[in-house]
Every structure is written in C-alpha cells, then in structure tokens.
Amino acid sequence: MAEIRPTVIREEKVQAINEIATKLRESQTTVVADYRGLTVAQVTELRKQLREAGVEFQVLKNSLTRLATEKESLTELDQYLTGPNALAFSKDDIIAPAKVIAEFAKKNDKLEIKGGVIEGKVVDAEQIKALASLPNREGLLSMLLSVLQAPMRNVALAVKAVAEQKEGQGA
Image (cartoon, rainbow, N blue to C red):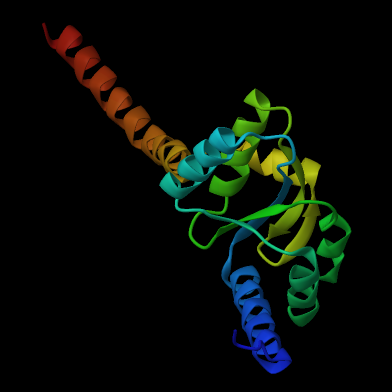
C-alpha cells in the first residue's frame, strides 16, 4: 500500500483553494445554499436546472472556501459558511443562480438560501431573493426594447392621425 505524503495532500488543497478563489473572482453571482434534507433526486433535479441555466453548482468544504474568501477579500461571506453548503457560480448571467435556486426553494422548503456574492459584494439571503425576483436577461431586454419602441410608435400614430384628418377635410 502506497503511503500518502502530507505534501501531496497540501498541494491538492492549495489547488482546490485556488480553484474556489478563481470561481469567486470570475463569477458575476455566487449563491450559498444549505441543501440539508433534500433527497438525492431533488439535488439531481436542482443541478440539472442550474446546468441548463449555465450555472455551476458544487458542494465545497467550508474550511477550503473560507481560505479562498480570504484570498479574494470576501471574508464577510464566511458567516454563511456553516453546516453543509453548496455554492452556485455564474460567470455570465447575474440573475440565473438566484432565480433558479429561489424558484426551487419555493417548491422544496428544505433548500435554504443563506447569502452570496453579487459582482464582488457580499450580500444576505434577502438581497439574493430580491435579485431572483428581477426578470431574466431576455425579459429585461424585451422591456428595454418596448420602451425604445414607444416613441416611434407614438410618432407613427400621430402621423397616421394627421393623414386621416387631412383625408377627411379634403373629401
């Protein structure tokens, strides 16, 4: 049987800490959730929904995550790193992890949002839930598009009304 050397274990831990730190740094949003009490099937379903939204979901050791938060100057997050936790990381969509986890938590009360990081700022569960209540990127874009189209639509209606009025006078 091969002997495991402490230096090998230490190198693996350093690598794990660096990976967590990189994820914290590169993510637009990170959500910390307590998944205690969820069945394997429920966790699998949650992972599937998060993966479809482009979100990475991992169960990480709190001790390693705390070392990573120290490295990234996010030690305020440590208050949420107690008990069994999973972290959801999203590089691209700021709303996706909060929205998917909050929706899942509505149907599965065992899943508890503890807090997270939004664009480098540590936030509590209420702020994560508030973020989740916002429309997703596509929803925001369609709202913006309708706002931009409104003035053009009003001008077109005014021109049409003037044209109809002139037709009515000329007839």
